[in-house]
Image (cartoon, rainbow, N blue to C red):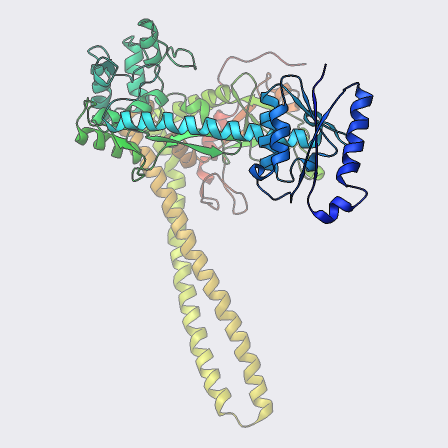
Length: 571
Ligand SMILES: [Zn+2]
């Protein structure tokens, strides 16, 4: 049989007389409801107190709660009869629920199923969470204390180069197997080896990676799997880790929100939350660490030398041209990893439909084109005497052009001086002239002279600009010739190669495989040209040379078409 305690309450004497919510009314509703549920002989408890009185002051409620036992029901007309205060409500609900009893309202039903019940439920969750945070804080307190005592905060595995020591892994000692590897990496970096060089050296010698080493010892190696080779990234991580110069710190990272993700980033040096741990031995000196750091920051460890040509195609920025529409080729990466030249207006790429490339959507493998083209250029340049002959004519033309521009510049300056003199003269006369008609004529002439001066100044500055460009070109050619003579083409970096291409004013026209060009040239799809540059063409790089490259015409004849074995016609 269900024990039922009915609780009725009014918050004032006035309300007690009010029919609608009077004590007797509430009681009648509750008893009727209990009867329908088959709950018999309910006990009734009442209070006549304000809803804001403390729970202890409500004797009736206290008695009602005291009668509640396992399986019992606390029945009210409405939940707000128990309390209008959420905290009090939560306390009452907790007491009732802990006894294994229920709270039911005649108007609102079972408490746990009502909106009020759900709200209380979330309050409980909130309380539980607060408690958990308390636990977290206490745990972190303990970890901090451990760190402040100079003991390590132990992770699943030790840092590369060290082993845990002490009864409870309180400190590190240098690991005799891995510490020398760390020291060697710093030594190589100090000598100026690149990150790539260092990674390659370690890989060539079969030295296990950080995770590979842990795995070989049967230790957990992190959740990212085991690295099979050293990479620039992993070398970089070792070379930038302060722990190796004895500056280990607990809490040296902090959680940072990046977009929707939380990531760990180094904590600022001056952040008071870092705890220095001087008991971790240094594997390299602070001086070495700082030297390597400086080299890394100033990029003195150089760039990666491998993959350079794959990643950075030779013929971008104007050397490669679409044979169909004349646009500068751009590159994209193929799904399978290689790079391709293609026309920026090919397929549906053109923003302006009028510019759509007539060649369609063609693409050429960067590695094939670059290797072929550079092979030819090297062949030309490899014969140094010939190369010099090749650039001699354009160099001579360029030098002549500089002289011509300089002469023109002198003439311009003379003209400009004359114009200034006339301007001063006119201005004087204008000021002294009393006849208004005559003054108007002088004024008109003055305006003309001022326009002439503006025009002359523009041409003068353009001449200076031309001289600068041609001088830069001559310097480029000179540098390329010297480098060839001194080192040969094998030592050339991509930029050196581009300098040579620029000196020769190379263009590579590329065609679609189905194009007329390819059909009539044994399926070849690109052609090297040494272009005589006109005033209105835009050469690669930054300079333009009107007619300076004329001399190359003769030599360019035999460079057309491929030297590689001819490919079959394509359908
Ligand atoms: Zn095109």
